[in-house]
Length: 137
Length: 414
Image (cartoon, rainbow over all chains, first blue to last red; front, side, top):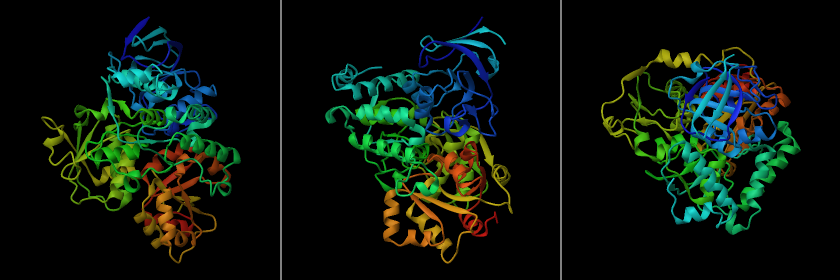
């Protein structure tokens, strides 16, 4: 098991499967929130389902709407399980706080999109600022 | 976080559940960003379009608004960003009664809390601009970047829940752009091609945003040879925030915190990167081509000022929009009221165009209205909207206001 230290985050401890891209994130710009998939043609995860995944991305982009949207998505059961960023912006953190969605950023060991692979099983503990790779894909 | 007596009372629920929720919510965010305490704010501005809210978040607002007025009234002046439905014109767009009812419920809940339904993303041009050093809690990235950069106010990007929490309590966690250290320049750009017109300013903003790429980068820009207009800064900032999640920029000799380069560098300036015509053309080439059919031409994102409304009317006078093309103009309710009085909206709508009040195209169920009206190919002079609308199923193209109007008349991109 590999442990990755990060800043203290938001939300509960969760375990799940990683979906990774060296790309950014906005719920408004990038998602089809009806189908539960990435919809922006230029996004590296276009066409893939984000539902119940632990998203691992570079940073969050403009668009304050994501702060409401995370809660709205979670209520309908089409939210990611957690989101890990190299650097979150304020909006996604605020959205995670409202939705009680797990979110962490600022990893000590470098670019998180390179340290975790799609399909890896992760445990995310925001209170401790710790992400554990339980199994490698 | 260090809490004063009043904040401890709020957190303990002694001032009611809405303020308890607000303090708790802001402390979660403040902890993530290492805020030491709270800072008082003079105003709050909330994004609360119903497409983003959905039923779940409307119920959340209604829950807060159900408490006694003394507990749920906002503590500082609080206004709203564009909404998702223009209740005077939604059925022709293909918006449903369910969408309109969600909007009505949102308006009722917000009004109950004392929130002024201004429905605008250009409050800095129309309502009450903040002052230099003024701490505020604004939603809408375009509002935040303009007020931070052009006016020298201090705000983070506040999503709807956090803007509401700030409004209910009159404070926000002291982190990010409320702190001097986070307002210093981290990237430096020297502009070698002077922008001409709103779209050029938007492209410049979009490129710098893309090159910054993070909320925590602050660009300082040199080489601008003219003092831009408020509308030009509006388009530049909105695009920069959209492409880069950038909340603040400085322009040496123009924006208030940057009388000199040294004033925003706190030491050695970052290495300079030149912005050339080729760089700007490369970003432009991402969006659209001549001769292609256009389904809908959009003037929005940000909402149009009085001056832009007059410019659109002047360009449309005596012309008729092509039968297979729609032209949508989004503006603030206050601007619309003036433009009715001034005869500007009748001039625009005589062409077959439609002016929407208090909405913005991309946050009014863009996917659903696109499908209802067979809008696929979208043309706009807004660099922001062409950046964001593809995720809603559109093929966006970018052109100047003049070329957008000519294309709407021709039915194809001129």
